[in-house]
Each structure stands twice: as structure tokens, then as C-alpha cells.
Image (cartoon, rainbow, N blue to C red; front, top):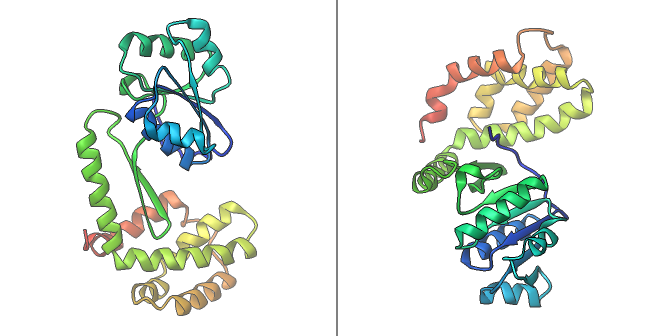
Length: 244
């Protein structure tokens, strides 16, 4: 079973087997994430050659029909990307990478991939990613657009995001216990006086009122995230989804 994670790939070794357009796209993606990218193939796109010449990635021409060469190519990889147009070679690379205990992104067979590369977006610092895990890429791409536009048009969420970031900074300075902090966030979000100020984009006033309420004391129970979140959604669902 796969779970969604955001992972810092800075300095991690990614080896891409395949020097075509798919390998090129994967190289750009992982390079953007800060990974050390090596592309291994019999031939390379012009873009990959340019990236190698500028020192951004490493390209190695290898005889991938030779198992020993495949092992040498991927032995130091944290992630192996399979992106050739040869099923026989893809199967061999997958088997070797599996034995070596590597995380595998197989661009040719989503079902056996350990890692999927989703469609992703960001609005006001809120990042999101969408994947159908290879079942319906077109639908996933459209879903990304729908989510992005919904968030972009949602002025209420924009105000909540603005308030939450500033309030969290203050709470982390004032309250050391993470459990109490989580309850504090929801205690304030469920306060109608504070939330009405947030709704009207009076962020500074909402912050001052929230701080006063917190300093007076936060109840020990009743505002755990698993209890508070459903209450919040029940109360504000229509307004939150009104722009979608």
C-alpha cells in the first residue's frame, strides 16, 4: 500500500535508466527537488546532454544488456527510475533494483512502482498532489485543475491560511507541549467571535482576540483534532465550498 509523503530529496541519489523524453522529464523533476541525478542509457536527448554539459546531471552510456553494468549503475541509488522503451530491459532493471532494496519509480508500469510522480500544485503556500496511481492520468490532471481553481478562488480559505500561519508562530513560542498546541489551534478556530473576524479578513483583530482567549486558558478536553475538525466542517462547510 502506498501512502502520500513529502520527502526532502536534497543530496539523494536518483538513477534514471533511460535517456528518452520520459527520462528527461523525470531528470528535470528530481533535479528540481535537489537530488543528485544520474541518467544511464545507450542514447540521450539533446536536453539531457545539455544538462550534463552544464554540470546539472551526470549521464553515462552503458551496455545495459549486461547485468553487472546495471548493478554498477544503480548500486548507490536511493531511487531508481525505469524509463526505457524495452520491456525486457525494464523487467531486468526492476528485478535487480528490487533485489538491491531500492525504491523504484517505473514510468512504464505504475502497478509495480513503489513511488508515483503525481501532478502537483500550490496556492498560497498550501501544496497538494494528485495521482490516480496510473489508472487514469487524464482524470487526475483535470482533478488537479479543479482543486487549484477552488483554492485560488476561495477567499475564506485564504483568510484562514493567513491567520493560521501567524497564530501558529505565536502559539509555538508560548506553548511547548505539542498536544496542547493542537488543541489550542482548534479551540480558537471553533470560537465564533474569532472566526467571524477571520471571515471578514480582519486578521490582526482576530489574532489579538485569539491570543487573549488562549491566555485565559484552553480546555483540556474537547478540542482534539479528531473531534474538533468534524465540528468545524459541519459548521462552515457551505461557506468553504461555496466558491468551488
